[in-house]
Length: 131
Image (cartoon, rainbow, N blue to C red; front, top):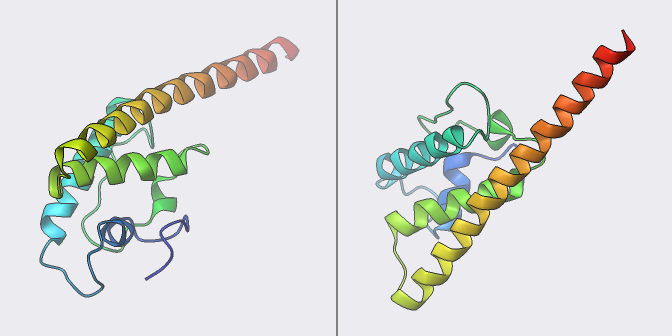
């Protein structure tokens, strides 16, 4: 399996690796795919990712197909936290920490997306002024 930090790595494969699911174990794939797609739907509602809703069907979908404006590390961490909290909930003390981190990342992704849209709008406006 490719490194989970590699932008071209399998989305499903990297999440399985993060959850310590050994290579070749596919029994959890349908559940993980459902949770991954739910998280992609959430990201889409937040304005993160492609304008068309993104989803995966198997291990062939890669992170570079979803790629989001330099937010890849936050998106991957957010995806892991969202999937882990449902698929393999931690103990109560760890749960609170993970939920706080997930909520912080959700806020940061929203802020980052708003900032990127603002910069893009300003650049578009500058181009119109020069015409």
